[in-house]
Image 1 (cartoon, each protein chain N blue to C red):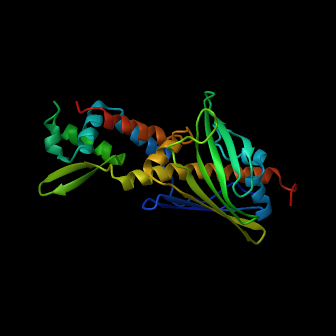
Image 2: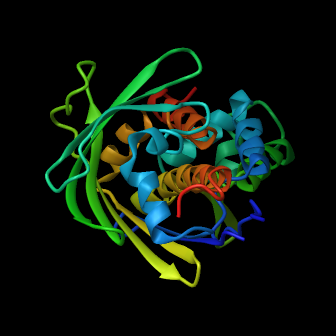
Image 3: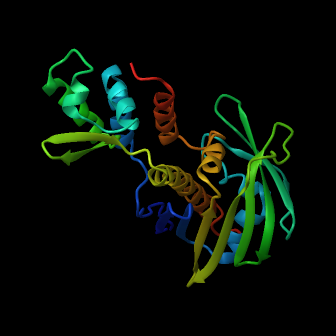
Length: 122
Length: 164
């Protein structure tokens, strides 16, 4: 009897991670913060001056982007600089994750075919 | 139990997938060799593959297409580089144009498959090596990847738009 379970090391992006990314991107202010972060680090307080909202409100938006792993914060003196990690390595990691998910699907389908042919070919 | 481990190397753009399958290397080999079996696992569940040509010999060529939920077709090809039954396969896999033939200007990726008997089972190692990031993105653009692709596209869209 075959089991269809397999263990995965290095998980691909989970549904929960995707939810966090899409939720983070579903807000116009957060998309703008991400755009600015991608163009070079600004501090949270500098970012807050672009928007007609309080500093804590901007900090909240930054925290949502951070939880979705779209940005990172770097402490520089008393300032918190917001970076978006758009490096080639992080892009390569994201792309390899997609190919990994594809291969996990493929192996899953191979396992199902082998199970269905049980007792057939040698 | 079919155990899978994966190793991603972003420096060399290489993905290694290791699976233990409950069958002999000879049986696993047929999943690669027989186009009717191959097309049952090559495409993602929502993009079934059809191989219209599959020459499983060194220098042989394959042509396939995958059909998406909306009826869209994505086309690709293989070129067999090495075959050592039932243990080793090396092939190139690239994108094909609407005519089904290799698309110029898009380099293929390299696939290295090793099948080793481990008791009554087979340890299958698939190493996928890519040339560059744009090739990786273009090949995923076939519609093969779900989920994360959409998220990455969203982020790309954001990059293109000017700040408010």
